[in-house]
Amino acid sequence: MYRTSKKSAISIKDKMDSFHLSFSTSELSENVSNDFIENPKSSVYSNGKRAWFKEHKPKVINQIDSQLRKKFEIKEENNLIVCMYYPPEKDENNRFLEQTLVIKDSKPNISSRIIISTTNELTDISFQNSHPEMMELKPWVAYQSPSMIGGMLTYTFQNKNNFVIPPKKGFRQVRKSKNINNRHILVFDYMLSGDEMKKMTEAMVSNFSKNPNEKLTETDTKSLEDAINELRN
Image 1: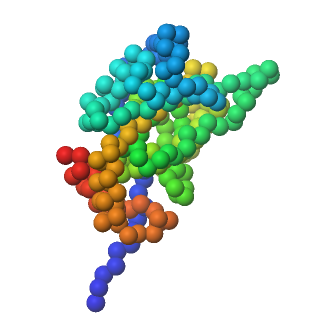
Image 2 (image 1 turned 90 degrees about the horizontal axis):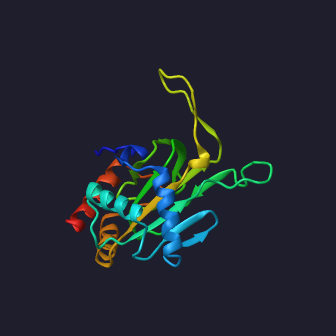
Image 3 (image 1 turned 90 degrees about the vertical axis):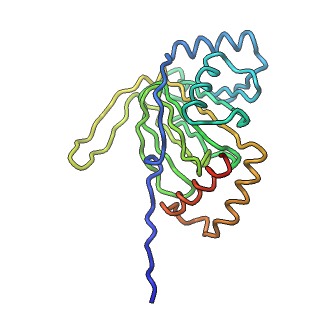
């Protein structure tokens, strides 16, 4: 006779760590603009976002990076790629050209993805084919995706001047306004080092033989977290 245990899906947002930052949006905008004038080849602009792939980055980005590495214990060998999404553009009738902003999941070689909004925001988070989870982002709070997931989350934002938090048990529906004209979304991607990537692959192959379409469970999460922590220590 044997026992079977039912796997229960977990909440991704409940596994995310957060950290309050002390920066201003005006400081970010001014510093990025000045840096672009002085170092025009250090970043790439495309479709409403600017990305920094090389070592040089604006001063404010480096300051944020320093605090994030200290808080989340990210090593120096984990190279950083930063992407900043500007406020959505409008047409001649003052209507947004795009109804949504989607930050898609990325390659599996991201060790840690940290997302920051400069304004109060609401986003739908989805992992693979799972049903999206709604999560409120506070201004200038850094949210780190779970280490076993890295950059494999997709974030969807609505380009509107307000958002609605659905009613919960004991709480009514809440409508909140947001300064979308001042919204900047920062994405900090810390890449796996070559050695970490090799060990990560070995750990996943040796510890998991599950159907990739199954939802992540508490047991899966703990096992993969242990493997990642072991290779990082």
